[in-house]
Image (tube, rainbow, N blue to C red; front, side):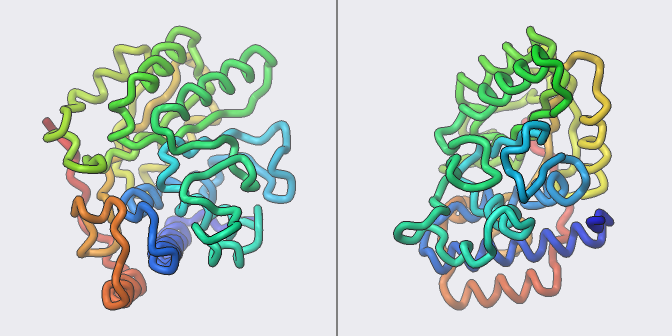
Length: 286
């Protein structure tokens, strides 16, 4: 049985972050800030007894569906899928290389990946379709979609939100990585998203707001997915820090897709080794 304790999840998240930094350093490309901000969410989903899956049978019909809509952060998902045995860990060293399976954005050729993603705003629509299929077919699998807050500038995302609310897709959850930054700016300075929760509620969703780096809070809200029967899709607004875990990357716009130097890599390794991931999360406000 997998260890799902908070201590285990925190250690696992630190290990995943180290892999992310090293893979992007080796590839000399990648989106590091958003991958680090969503790491704790992914670790809780895959190691915290939230998602139902079988690494030996990625296409198992009764698996829960997970869609990494913010595909530019796929490097975080790859690390976890490899660690769980969906494919060999040795594949991680090929990230973004020639003829690699692991490109910059996820695609369906990778075991454990449900759909291509990275063209932002598409994942929630696919997730809503999967959820409707499950409802019509009387299947009990759940669908969870991870989106970025900058991705919520896409109109297609709100079309999907409207669709899910109308069809009462209580078997669907979206987790929003609310790190407060998009590719070029801070979200509230670029195009304001607040009042964010009220917008989701207006589309017929139940909304929960949590600290996206607290495994305790993530588990508490995501474990409700298994027993939901109120007909409302669930939106979890997870406040996070872009670049989480590496002090000089946190909340810095440059690190949306910056590549660390050799000296920066060593600094990051040391910080992740001794766990400086204790900075309180500030909720994004208008």
